[in-house]
Image (tube, rainbow, N blue to C red; front, side):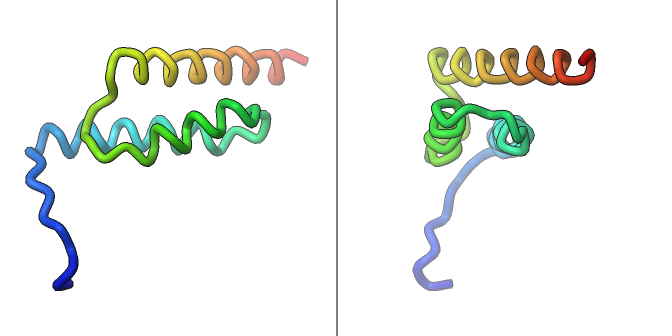
Length: 77
């Protein structure tokens, strides 16, 4: 306990971090996720701030769209 660092995030920032974590976790559970996407999710999950930059948000969005598209193809087959 003596070595823990206090992070002064607001409630809104905590909710935002939780949403990002939920999105990343959902994608990581996809068994068809490619290695490059898995590596990107690892990097995004290790960020030490409660938000994503525009580029990071776009990258996460691309992975989400591709996974959603692949999931739809799986169910249609």
